[in-house]
Length: 242
Ligand SMILES: [Zn+2]
Image 1 (tube, rainbow, N blue to C red):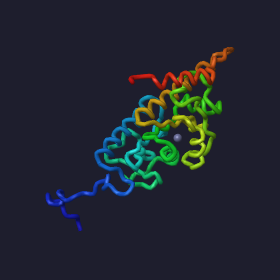
Image 2: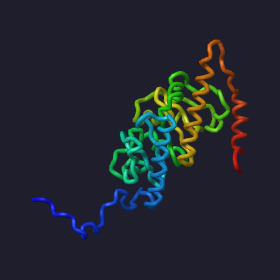
Image 3: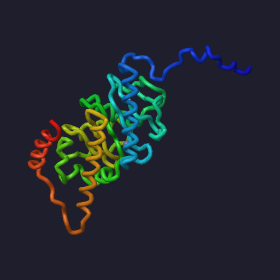
């Protein structure tokens, strides 16, 4: 038979909340999760708006307590709403939401397990991806490599979404906050979504500079020495508002 119409009494009944109650591995407060999710969605949208990602080809994550909030697989960022929060524990077990997490979850989790990262950004930015097919390390074209911990390495190719790719990535990330993934893209982490995003943008910009300088017929770009980079790194540590 037809369902009974909802009365005012039903409407007042408690509804299940997608964010659930804090349990083992779950973040401390709903507010903290909601704020972090909003910032994550804004960052993911920015990667598309700034041309670092086409469609749903990148992914973003942020740590909240023991949980990692992460973009879901196959959902365009403009369609992500506050109720779509997806969260997993460091073991990959889903603790928040019902949408499936990004297929690149193994890379994100590997970064959180191995470093003090609070946020991770992965893109298929065009110049960075192009460079990843040409060299095992981005040549020292600019001192901003110092802001990423040194010369940016390229992680050897492995199929997307695999533990093998996550392992290759960790090798390339040693003492760095960003690396390239061969024939795939970029990954960068930071103490915030803004920092992880900025490092991604810097890396893409440096790759673009190297490609541009390398494409002038008959000329070869000058490169920095390891010593010059080390000096720049030292200066970058004291850069900005103290
Ligand atoms: Zn990818």
